[in-house]
Amino acid sequence: MNVNRVGMILLFPVWRLYAEGLVCAPDGRPLANALVDIWQSDEDGFYDIQYPDRTEPGLRARLRTDANGRFYFWSVMPTSYPIPYDGPVGDMLKATNRHPYRPAHLHFLLAAEGYETLITHLFVEGDRYLDSDAVFGVKKSLIRSYTQGAPGVAPDGRNMDSPWHRLSNEFRLKQAEPVQTRKGAA
Image 1 (tube, helix red, strand yellow):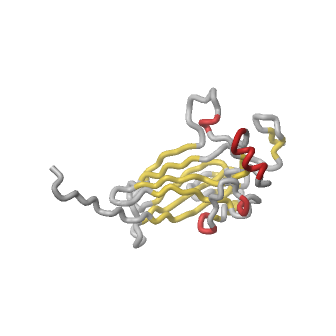
Image 2: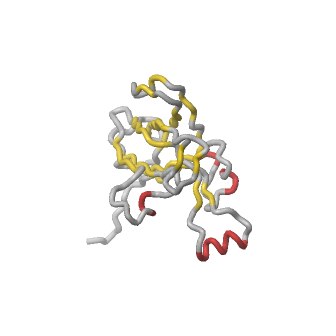
Image 3: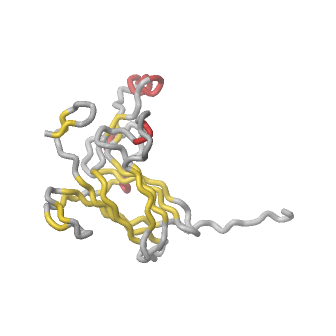
């Protein structure tokens, strides 16, 4: 039985997640050395900055794509969580008969020289809050299948002794507009 830090019994184990991606130009050309910044909440639904006693970041990573525009990392499966709902936000949610939950997701910030920075998140297909996200952030195009892998050898060669999940995604960055100088500027 798994018990989280606030004493709640988890009905599922904390699944390992292998996430991989490809960062491309609009024409599909891979972008080498692109910045990939990832963050997510923990199994209790909290981000590292919500813990007053935490001094180190948690469930965050900053990576660079390889020569083929690819990246990968291991994490834990994201979970649904409530946004803070005390004060005016809670009053608004109660007045509109809405819950405070966000569906499970991973956040991504992707940047490459000559391209616009993309900040997005990828939601877990089948999450019960996809149709009622408290902050209205879900779009169909952002929902992904986090497929389950069986025990055995993972894509990076790691031997997994229990089931795990996999997320694969291609990100296309928009070409940045050229910076124009103003006429008469000194």
